[in-house]
Structure formats: structure tokens, C-alpha cells
Length: 475
Image 1 (tube, helix red, strand yellow):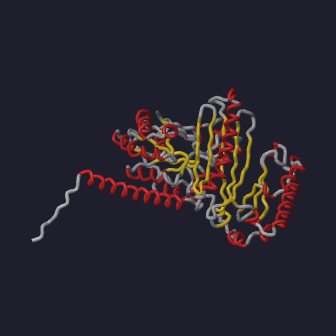
Image 2 (cartoon, rainbow, N blue to C red):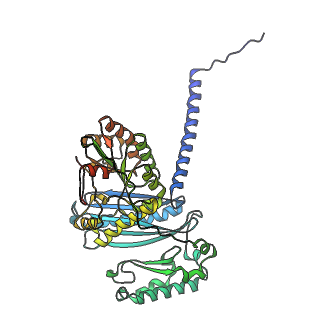
């Protein structure tokens, strides 16, 4: 008969093994979860290899909004971030110098916006426009272009796009001269010597490319008087086809189909009980590839409807999320193209901000936004006149969750719970993870108090709000 030998492990050894095993398991699933999230985020982007973050800030003396594309390449990101930081530092220096002229009623503003053009697979043109106004009557606009290969992890030069470079450059120069000479509105402002200096060295050209044209950009005062503003010259792609690198020429054979300009909102308003307790939750500055899906899931779990005020720049990057928002029965509003303080713009520019976003939302979903929320809640008589002209209700808020300021789920819940009332319009942002963190508890608390969550249009209909506002809801 064999004797069974039982090993007696000390308690500390067993505890050590359990702890180590837990750490290994936790580390594996954390990395796995992060990897899945990153893959999902990349898949959502309309521009594979690029992710877009829109950063906003508001103080007593200035506001700023910065759209920043993020690539997988640290080298690309560093170049872009260096330039953005330079623009922000310059702006803040100017704010400090003009501090005596600034207050809550007259704030400085910086807006850095990017237009993204796809040249070919993994090749993109990023055209940045930095506009700042810091106390004077006129703002200052600067253009910067980055042409990137996100797979190759490098910046592109014109030599990567064009062959027969000298002949190609001469063709571009000739086209610029001809177009300026034929433009009777622009020609009187152009300084010929400055233009020739700018055209002399292609390395310094600010350019982008798409299937229609090569675009050259000149800053204010670079080749013309300030009254001309920034200048863009477009050289039709047909003029350059013979000079394009073969792989680029092949990729640019794209047919662009313009969408039908007719469209309608997908929101189906339901009749509300006049004696019910209703609030409208609103989310600004999205869609965001990580946060917005989390917000949508929580809204689904609590059978809640909401209104998303989207930026055109974000819509362009994440059209599939726009479709998801509509598909789940939520409402989409217009938050402008670039999150610009509309009070700093003339009426033509205000209209352009609104129309560009309206069209991008339609292109992504087949539906138009139902209302507009001006960035920072800032509006003046010009903004009101434009929204009236476009027959677009202007919607603000009666409860500010301050999620943009506190970034604290508990604080967000406390602010909303203390201030909310039946008929409130609540301001939140679907770009902050902490807002998504706060939402389950917030919905649970408000639901226990008898509130129902409706869209802005439904709430305004119940309140018999007519005209174009602005509408704030009740506090």
C-alpha cells in the first residue's frame, strides 16, 4: 500500500500564486480590450490610418477650437503637433498683450480647422487653416499643409507626386499666373514681385491634391494686399496628368457622385403628455469613435432618446457613427463645420459654416439636421438673421453639466441632478470619456425621479415653441 504524501503549502505561497495569476489575467484582458478598441476606432474612420480629435477651450478672455488628425506615426504626429503648438503659443501671447481689451463680452478666438483630401490608399493631404482674432477689428488667417503617407510613416513632397519635375513646376507656375491675370477681382491686389518670389521655390509651396485639382495656397499678405485675404489657386488635374507618378494617377481615377440635395429629417416626433416630466439630453462636438458608441449603448439600455449636435469636420471622419445615431432613433443637430465662434464671422461665412455641416450630415446619412447650436452658445444679430434665413431653429440649453470643465462623473451627476427640471435642455459632450462614465448613473437617477428622455424637437413641440429661437428649455 502506497503512502500518499500531501504537500502543505504555506498560506502566503498560495496567496502569492493567486495574486500573480490575477495580474497576468488582468494584464492580458486589458491589453486585449485596448487592442479591440483601437481596431474598432480605426475601422470607424472615413480616412483609414487617421483619427480626428477636436479640442475646445473656453475662458473669460478667449475661446479656442482645434481639430487635430492623429496618425499611427509618431513622426507625422510630431510635425503636426509642433505647428499647432506654435499657433496656439502665438495666439496666447497675443491674448496676453491685448488682455486689457478683452472680457466676457469681447473674447479672443482661435480656430484651427483641417480639411482632409485622400490622394490614394494611405496618402492624404491635410490642409490646416488657423484663424485668430485677439482684440483688433480684423482677424489673421494662416494656412499650412501636410501631405502624409500614413502607411509609409512619412511626409510627402511634390517630388513624390510628380515626375518630370521641372516641366511640371513650370506648368503649375504658368497656370497660377494665368488664373491671377484673368481674375479681375483679385488681380489689382496682387504684388507681382512677391508672387514670383513665392513661386520660385516649390519646396516652400503649400499644396494639396485630389482627383479634381492640385491646390496651391497663399497666406494673407504673402502675394497680395491684405484685402485679398488668403488665396487658393486650383490647377485642373487634366493639366498635370502627364506629370503624375503612375501609381498616383491610377488612384486618382475616381468618379465623384454628388448627392441629391433634397432630404429630410429622420426624426419621428411622438405626441407627449402635457403633464409628463420630459427633458432633452444633448451632446455636442461629436461624433467621437470611442465615446459616442458608449453613449449610444447607454441610451439604448435605458430606452432614452437624445439629440447630438455634430461638427461637420467630425462627421466627415466618422460617417458610420452618424448613421448609427439616426438608426437608433436619435436626433442630429448642426454644430457648425469648425466650432468657430460665429459672432466673429460675417453673414456669408456663418451661412457657409452651417451649410457645409448640413450637407455633410446628409451625405453621411441621407437626412438633414433639424436645428443648430452655435459653438460656445455665442450668437448675435447676424447669427439670428442667418438662422432665420435658413429656417433653422437655434437651440441652446438651460442646464450646463460642466462636463467639459470638471471631467468628473460624480460632479456631472450632481450638477445635472440639482439643476434639472421638467422641460430642461441639458448640455453635455460626447467627446469626453468621463461623460460616458457618468451617463448610466445619471439616467438611472433621473428615471427614478419620473423623467422621460426626448429629443429637442419633441420638447420644443410640447412647449409650443415657434420660430427660430434661440430656445433654452426650462430651468
